[in-house]
Length: 261
Ligand SMILES: NC(=O)c1ccc[n+]([C@@H]2O[C@H](COP(=O)([O-])OP(=O)(O)OC[C@H]3O[C@@H](n4cnc5c(N)ncnc54)[C@H](OP(=O)(O)O)[C@@H]3O)[C@@H](O)[C@H]2O)c1
Image (tube, helix red, strand yellow):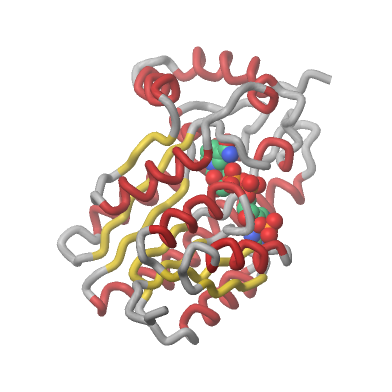
């Protein structure tokens, strides 16, 4: 295999959307540096190698400053320009705000917001002198509405969306592009990990993760500012959310996200 293949980094790639996005990059000629907190990241690397790409797995906790920094140090030591970066890692948390554990919420903020800013800072400063690079921020359709019973999660994804759009404008004409993907509910471990398995969202049919990853990859390659990930119904819902009053969307989401037990 040639080291002339471009290198992409993807956070949170042990499973779910991160792994699917890694497959998209591998199938389109990229090598991959990938991170996850568990040793499943090494299995993910084997999957990627099976597609003919070089894969460089790193196990680190994206909830801590040192964990984010250690992945970036690992990537730098590969001594290759990072041509694409996917800021994917993120966790959810379901339940009534009065009942959920503050520690869990602060961890969510550390991963979804602080960690995203931290890795983006390293990536942008690396890409700018090269005069090229592509950054994909994995946000969510949750960025387009209030998310009761996931009251911290939705706003963390709204942060990712507006962060991506803001950075995109700042970097216009530098050769570094920024794209956001806003997936609808997708068939990964996300909802069960968030303790939402018994909610209407958690137990209903979801978007295909391969489709969502393909849409994100294509939007990034085509330099689109953002794309909604999922089927036509998901795209329609995101469109309607633009003109639906916030209290109406909040009431609808509360019904879907409230735990059933
Ligand atoms: N699935 C959905 O319905 C949906 C919808 C919209 C947006 N999203 C977004 O998509 C992104 C990926 O979620 P997913 O659906 O693929 O969920 P997932 O299946 O739970 O995958 C999460 C990934 O993040 C890694 N991870 C979790 N905690 C970590 C930590 N502390 N440090 C480092 N890595 C960690 C996991 O690897 P390890 O287990 O090895 O840590 C795994 O690779 C998230 O940003 C999420 O907000 C998901």
